[in-house]
Image 1 (cartoon, helix red, strand yellow):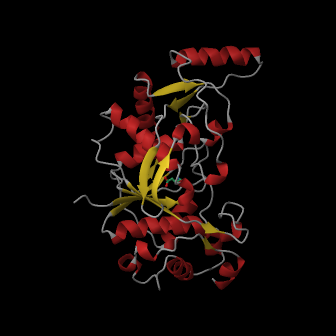
Image 2 (tube, protein in one colour):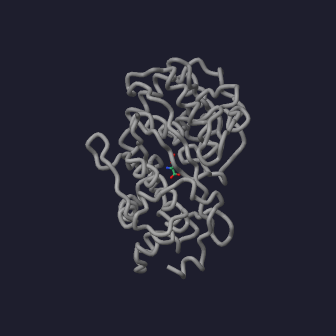
Image 3 (cartoon, protein in one colour):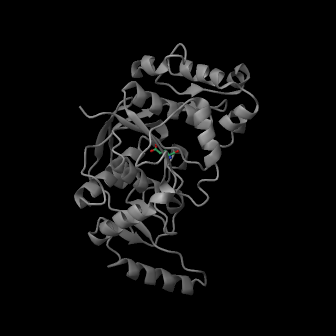
Amino acid sequence: MTSVVGRLAPSPTGLLHVGNARSLLLAWLAARHAGGKIYLRVEDLLPDGDAHLPSLLADLRWLGLDWDPWQDRDYTRQSARSAVYDALLAQLLACGGVYPCVCTRKDIDLAARAPHAEDHCAAYPGTCRGRFASESEALAFEHARAVAENRPPLGVALRLRVPPDPIAFSDRLNGPQSIGLPQDSGDIVVRRKDGGVAYMFAVVVDDWAMGVTQVVRGDDLLTATAQQLAVYAALQRLASPLLPPFAGLPAYAHVPLVLGDDGRRLAKRNQSLQLGVLRREGVPAARLRQWLAASIGLAAPADWIAQFDWARLPRQPVRFGAAELAAL
Ligand code: GLU
């Protein structure tokens, strides 16, 4: 039997709030309940992406989460793995799995971060598919256009060709899904114009490299899973020696989010709900753990690894607002 490997994959671009904490806790409990491992992978791909790393680590420890080392490191930072991503992208470019793109679009800017539902934008129409014979041709095009427009040249992005047919998968909590990528996202940005690798690519390379068998995260990433499965398929075709032999796709569980009093998912604007703020204000971690336990259908955090049960997890979003905060 394959043993369970999960991951905690926070982005340290903002401070962790109660909603992040709940999704991370569920990923941790699901792995630990199964007697499995869980790795911490810091997704710090954006420039200045690690500004909040120290408080992230402190928050996770305050919450009581632990994790296993991977490749002799306590935790992994995506910013330290760019050589692997770049080498795989070069191989995909050589075999035509990805192509250079000179389009200026908002989705290129957004590509580095996980596409939470509020960021969703229109599908890419495939303008640059088959347009350039090589990356240098695309770069030359961009340089000429920059001169004509009297502005500094940008780089070129790389996009993954998505398959024409819908991608089907089953989510543990949300059931069977089928998503047609040409309509949903179009060809996916895997490297931004500034040369940085996109979230959608790095997440798959790392889940594969780390042998992740179970992905538990917020349900705003449910549809992004189809894009990630397209990346998996392209990497399987590539069969690169840079990755271990393919050992299967992870199982996915997208958990309901925590909403604020305004009915929207918690985000940076809900500063008072950040773990760092709660810590500084002297809220005992035990109180937050008690709320978290209740919110996932458990009586108390004392024995939550043993008691954890997907069947008890409420399928609706939970609310954490001023009243819940006051109760802490
Ligand atoms: N780093 C992503 C985020 O914090 C989550 C990625 C994932 O779990 O796949 O939104």
